[in-house]
Length: 105
Image (tube, rainbow, N blue to C red; front, top):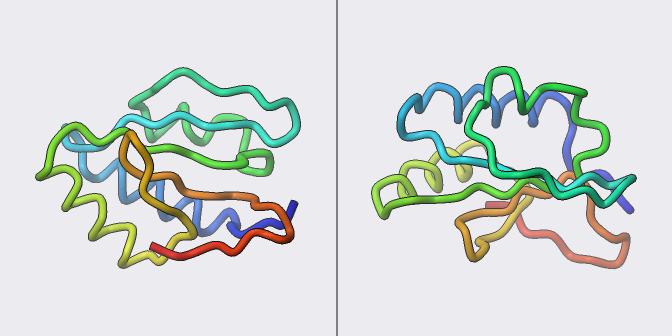
């Protein structure tokens, strides 16, 4: 697997989502080493940072409304993160297979 994120970009995502307060999306992560899929969570300040970012294969953002979608999309485009749209909203990649092409939102 190839790392496509760094701690600075993860922190940038956390800070931006935290600043949205009531409009911030819920998130869940997939752990690269264990395959563990976390439950949905809404705490961007403590929970997302807990344990660091080294083993986050991806984080998925759950979008609840069209307005929230537009706000989050604008932020993701501005900070230029590797990701894609998903059924729930967006998926931001920390690692991808070596042969996988990754687009940036």
